[in-house]
Image (cartoon, rainbow, N blue to C red; front, side, top):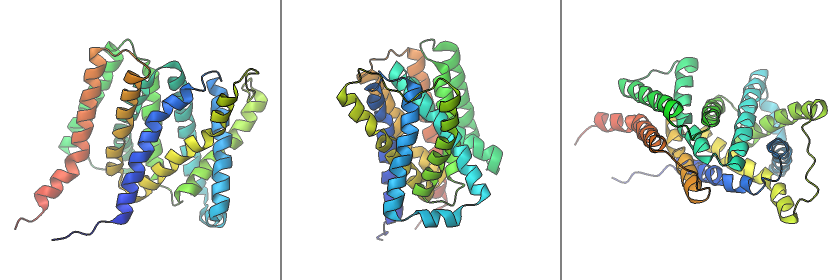
Length: 300
């Protein structure tokens, strides 16, 4: 019997895949801006992202709808999401510039595990025996990375994993549409960043000998930042959290390929083995609902 395709789910799935491909390959973009300090790049990423989002919101006439949905709870959710995303952005930029792309890929690989753990603690989601066993295996693999992979910068994948997993959970709690949610987050970041510029040595001043091509690349960092996050937010708003985990396999796999092909980053056998174990364990965890559906479906 013909089964009609849910167009919204197809679009959300496509958005999730494309978002993760862009995010995974964007290390190469930030590497081209290595002559600028990571702190300065982060500042430009925040302010140009806000300008890009404000223009999009204005063109789509979304500001009134945003104002109607704002509550203190919603503001709090997006303030927390903003804090997580700025930590994620800053760590990712630093890793891309300094050649720790394997670590950032590992961070995004363990992010679904973090999201599942947060959902268990905060929301009270139940864990089946398969999921619990898979999470234990992943935790053991991460421990093995920390103990035996001396070539890795361990704080990178831990920060990225925790912040991206938490960000995914926060996006499931908001009533705002993707544009409105991202605007609230970047607006919050700008409000927090301005006092930092005034009270610290962090600056938006660019090097005096900055090549014109690099300056042009910098100007599009708003699009580089906003487009994948908007696609990610759209997918998160239309798909269950477990399904989002499948699309996040694309990002760490892209990161691993970028690290090996373009950065020539060395990998120990332990790192490659642990990466493979985590990848396989997450696949088992996230595939479990499909197995259950197959067992419960009536046979003809």
